Image (cartoon, rainbow over all chains, first blue to last red; front, side, top):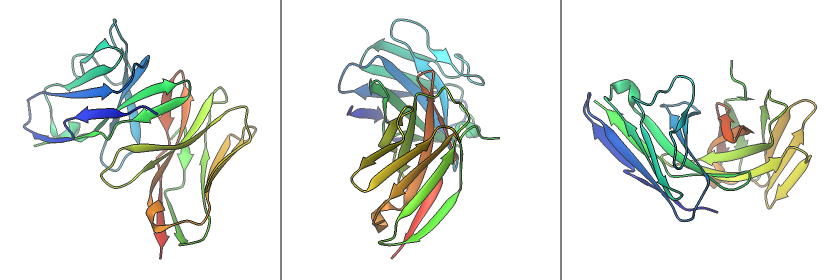
Length: 113
Length: 109
């Protein structure tokens, strides 16, 4: 299995600011994803982080709000821009270590005041 | 409504078996998954099954897949208090997961 580290694990931020979340994997992986889990809800895919090209965003998510970087096969960042209280969620990184095996990090718990 | 559906809550006594059910809609899904989420934690991959299989067993966990009815179940044998958590069913479409709403399992001592 892949070991996935996310930073920060939690943060409290002010409205209007931006926060960058990092995801580091202990092995090279082709596929990396970012999900959001709003309070008391299930998970929703934000985007697929593509190495060497722009991320692929799901309906309802845009690059200006959630810019993503993927500089190599072990690392990705997700930025939550111009935050509002509605962005308070857990943001989770996911990787496919082998075909069909999808693992998640511990998540980054964001509270926006 | 949800593409992947689960009941919201299940309560069992310690030592009993738990069965958590899930229905999905996309017949082209290649893999189906069960994840466990404990309070304040991320998602733990419990098990997954390839869509051409009917059953998969892993220690106390048994997954049954009825592809005709698009029904997936997770059976936990000898349920322990440490099994109390939210269990998410998910299906893989185009290499990304679609999740159910989660079933909260409460294990009574």
